[in-house]
Length: 301
Length: 247
Image (cartoon, rainbow over all chains, first blue to last red; front, side, top):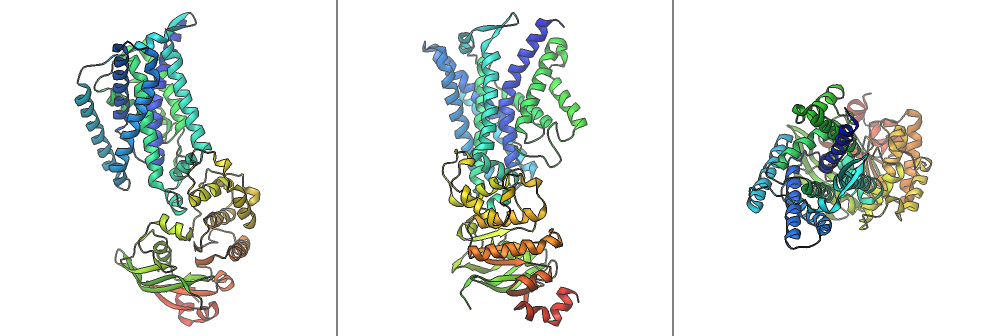
């Protein structure tokens, strides 16, 4: 393998890992605190992507600066993820926390299906591409190879910022401590007067905002189309399970591992591209059934 | 006798046909040190669960300081002044001791500035003082998982006291504590309870502890209060000696 292929595979892998991490971290946060595997998470990712593409196209057709797309996609995705997350947690999920896991899976899968139909209804079935922001950011040279600055700088930058911000939030702020305390022992938290319902609402909303932001940041680099949410949820699930359910920092490491694995497969063994993330997951789970960073009584968040 | 702070009347509850409470009347008075004793599975912990909102009785009422609290949520009841220490300390194991205390203080004070660093909490001095009273201030910066059971018990109780309760309900406060430590734990506990003017109810199996620390004892047997009185009266009862103490 020559240096160019190696460099490209690493850059592609890191960019891809950044996108997956944004979704997986929200999923693992929700699981860590609420003990719900949220299949609907892919739906929030797709809605964020559609919104971002729609905003990007509107900005381009209005002849405005493509740089406007950046703040607009953040605000749009955060609002959409926030509102949807609040409504779904408050009016659906709150009633199934004490139900069986199978029912929780079915309910979140039903929400995912509804979100897919909402996308079809609002955005239609045609794919959207809005890459003017990627073009505006131009390219930079990495070891002599020109590469999109959006993918090599912005996406990993956002992912690192998310990880650092989330760590700071969870380990330093009062709200973060309330969330980690409730994740550790909901009964004890309630006994001391913590409003666990509110903690759950906030946690779910943070998770859905992160998923929508993941989709919004992914949109300028890809064709936004039906089915992208389903692809992402399966991949995020692989990341979350490989890391160990509820592991925020672990999700970052595993996203990089799976992102690089997939990217090297594309360059070296393209026929294994789709299989690679699950191959890595299978290998890890064979050796460590609770995930790379999980324990039997896994620490949540 | 002083006014009843907790007043349970005609409580009934059963689990799979087993009656844990079958017409229980029990009052807890201001400044009481009430021990509830009885055979395993008799329903003692059920009483604590009902008083703290974890269980709703099939029938009957519980009043706290005149207000009916039957079936209210644990959070609602905690806010009104009944705190609970569990048989197994329910601490946030991966947080430090002072973080546990500050989380409790934040929940108590309904702190609105949720984005502020926990370390900037204004309740820090008050919490350190409480840990000092309980004799565990020296481990304030340690993560709970690193501490022995005896210290965890004291911290669990300190955490319950951080909520400024009027009544503290404890489920075997010295279980899991070594026999050398248990008197020290209980001496410290009662000293702090007196200092904070907190009424205490504790479920206990260790008759030595009951004799030494309770002012009043209620024997809970097969879902009923079999006898109630001073430790001397109750522990001298032949039926209690036979069925509860096992003499």
